Amino acid sequence: MTNFLDAIGHVLDGIHQTSGLPPGKLGDVVIAPGILGSNLSDAGGIQVWPSLDISLNRLRLPSNQDNLLLPSGLHSVYRPLRETLEQHWRVHEFSYDWRDNIGRSADALRNFIHDRDMTGKVHIVAHSMGGLVARMALHDEPTLLAGGRLVMLGTPNHGSIIALLALSSQLGASAFFKLLASFAPNVNAMAVADTWPGFYELMPCPFHDPSFHDLYSKPPAVLNVNFTRAAEDFHRLLDGLPTPNGTVYIGGAGLPTADGSVLPANGDGVVSHNRGLLRDALTFLVPGDHATLPANIIVRTALTPLLHTGTAAILAPFSHPSPST
Image (cartoon, rainbow, N blue to C red; front, side, top):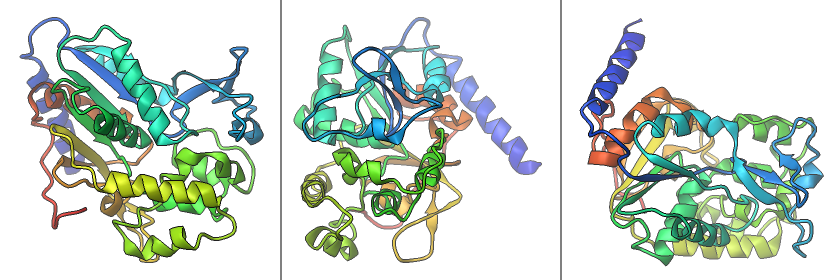
């Protein structure tokens, strides 16, 4: 009961902090979802993902780029986040093909921001893979946000064991989709992910954790060699990037999370703190799981003061026990 009352008190404190804000919209915020977070439709406008009668084969990304699926809005899990932000901000929903490589998705994000009438600072609230897309976009164009903030929710900045388990068919598709609070097809293997170069880029970073060097230098037969090599190049670039000014990381906590060959680590069930936390980012941890971080009431209450002032009374900063790279 005490923990519940404390949580309610923190939420009320956060609501009080937003009560003194000036009237009208404070600026522009872009929501960048994670993997599975963008709806995908075919050329005829028929929604392929999400769909209750989804065939995983429809989600294959052909190497010849035929039969491409088109981003068509955000998954409903982001609705509470959008509705909260719309109280104080002009909200723009960026949808992208999360199957494609993150570099192309970053180009799409940059074009998305440039194509809209945004004045002054632009902020990005990015969930999971969306944070990596945003980091790459800012690497290509450091002034993209004009001094705005990047808030990452559970982003696997150093990769995720879950991606490796899914690609190596050690994790069934049902288990994978359930981890991300999505409809779970009743199939045994996640072989369709083998056609998603962006998913390969979510595998554990070998520069953050050298125990994974062999995964990239001698990939197992079940992995696509070309995608694995491209993922290594992606991690080499990403691992060397400085953290953009104004970056905030909010991670889920309290759930055992796969972290390699060791016992499960603390995290959000998908991304461990070891693989999520980013050096030089203002960091907060909240109780909760990976999939529901965007809808988490503490996170949503904190976002407007965080974006507007860089602080949020509802959150206590987390001190990194040691620098991460």
